[in-house]
Length: 296
Length: 296
Image (cartoon, rainbow over all chains, first blue to last red; front, side, top):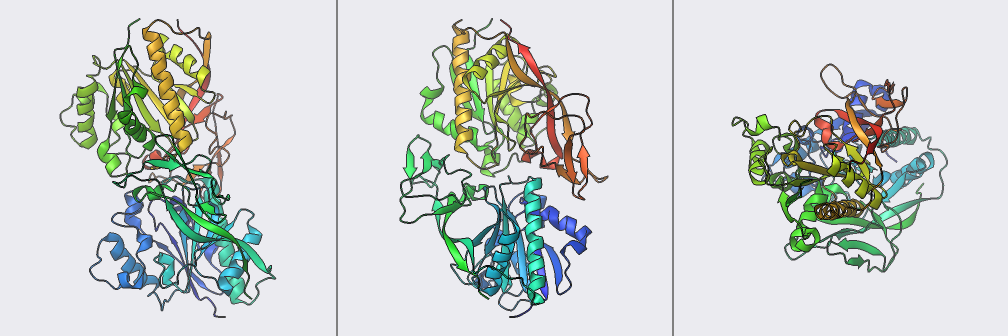
């Protein structure tokens, strides 16, 4: 297996997700916290202008701009599209990146706790997942490996290994101490693991790790004009990673009627009622629960 | 006592507080829900352009623009200052308003539950407080009667009686069903009470009502440049209306040190870590617990 020489930690990819932004400040003042002997760690502030304006983004979502065709398209020139090209130049280029691992720090308003989102199912990621899960009682492992790294549009997909740390519940523009500490701890465990991995000293890990795998995204009830006509049912609110079964209430329309879930599998909702999805009426993601073999 | 002929319900005074905005839509479709025989009810969308842009405000906080000198000052002409003048024309003018009661609907990211904020201590308000408290187990009564109605800068201070319904916790740009229902219920109880009050049929109420009274506002720890160097302590996060005693930890600085509260009274924090205060570094309000005599 290859070793990791350059790691980048990105905060503020969304300008109103404050935990990563404040952790970057802390680490810039105390770089030893993210330094490890066998690799270099750099930090990057993803979307400083969105933070200045206290918004998720100015023109479009920065964390959706990293498919190769878009990065190569000179006609895509708004702020985030331009910022994506600059970040790709700095950390990438995608497909042949100078950065071996990108850790991108995010908050959600959903009750997801500290969630480690992994974009591919390989030895490094499965071992990392098992390592982190053993060290953080409330860590959640979520695989979003439904497409290739090249096809992923996330910032962290620039590097051959890209990880998202997604921690909530935290309202936009707020710093919660619990959420900040979870993100800080999970980042430290990842850096520790990379160090052990580089040195060939990964401790004995279990055969499998309990995780969730992304399946689909549900939208809120809409009318013909695309306006919301309902909301997440209160039984589902805050119940991220609690199973949803066929027939369970899932939405309440503003006229009071309930919508029940019509599904043929035991689904684990997450990103439930995430504030950032106000403009596209996404209600939640659904995943399935899986035991992922740890590849050794 | 005077009767109430015209009541206005205002939603969306802050554009990213969604409960009131969606309740206005619901009531516009079903006006009977807010109609009562003895008075007229109208609705008003406070800051539609801020909602369009998914922000609290465009230029300045609309709910701070209603002191008479500002309303009379032609040099104050930005969007919210102009909007304040227009609303004052429509519902007011302040000091001699055509609207007898304004109910202004707000959300907070703080864990305040359904809170009824009253701006003066008189027969109507104390009776209303007692009436609502008896009908909603989780209702909180908060008096902000530290200045006169004329001196208050809130939108609802246009009318002789102005009430704020403040419900949380709800992230900005989210609709939670529980929060929506609490706001809907509290509004209905207020309208019911006005109807009974007008008819002289207010039921027997207790001698006193348990409430909180605003005392002071605390800021987050800042450096000399006015930047945040700390956050709300995790023991205090979500603990709105839980007493704080001298020596209790209240902030955690980003360097890990704790700040303890140095106060000479039993304080009841609220608006703890409210997201909207990201730009002025307010940490929380403090109140004292009081038994308010119900004036008959």
